[in-house]
Image 1 (cartoon, one colour):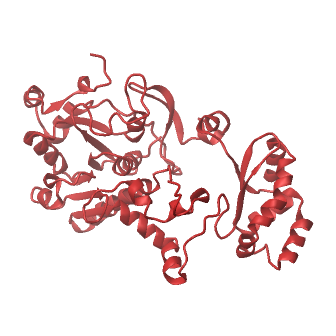
Image 2: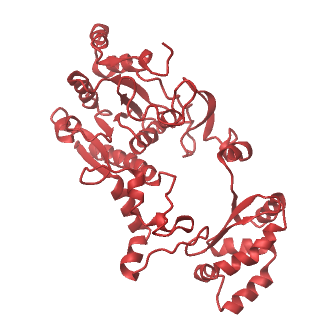
Image 3: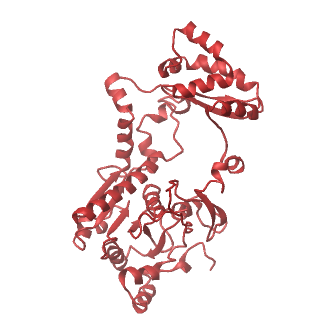
Length: 412
């Protein structure tokens, strides 16, 4: 479901990969009219795995829900001029570009000659304009050396593109900050956001950089323990596995009471000379604590474990595959209002995620499915640029633009 808080803001998105499309999706889910510009036939990410038998990418359709699609051959000068015209079209709620295509013809200074108050947000790999993706940035953060029992010699890569995701939400926030600034001052803004800057500034915010700089130490590789507190995974009698977190004092108390191990844990703390009521004490005693707890979980099936943990409001979760998540967890079902039934062209009926934000007192609107390439080409050219049917037809004849029939997933 989507919200209407950003209507009638219009954003032109010319992008690929994850960060920029996800930023556009975020804006669209709050009501912005996001017009996605793609090459005729699709860009470099249009056919990315996983694919439906029709050839439609579930990756692409997931990131482009709720947007309008216009297919333009931006390799041609006429196509580039169309995109520039769309970005700089008049109107107080227009004049916003979201891109990760660092090309001179979409440079802010060039667009500002056509519309001085234009807002452009360009997502980069590195701040100097050189190429980087999530995986080539993440390898420099230090995390692959401490993930899953890894070492600097045997790093473990993160499969979740965390920096892309963080960059997307930061970009959406920056665009709205610039829109707010323009409403107050009439001035445009040239926004640039580098993926590596997003990663390394986050390391600073979380104290990881200061730890290395001031204490002269890197984070240890501790497997499935939680750094600085207590948390670990445990196997149940029926072969299931749960993750326990006892970061706060309240979470620790709940875990201790749920397992009934107050006396053994108190004795362990006494022998070690530690206070398990404190995060540091729990972290330093993590291996012995986990060894004491493990038999309690191993002696009980998941249902009994869950009953005891829930009764004491402990913080825990069950390890699941995505298919198991869909089958067993109400949080990933229509019982959760952030999900809805969807039916995307070339994909078919499936569960669709709307905005994760719940806005009190405001109705949510159904999420439009990801369109076929060029579904809105004629509509956008007429509505935004005022082109008549003759002018639009000539652009089609010259193969500068195309409609949905050009989508490669459509039967010939």
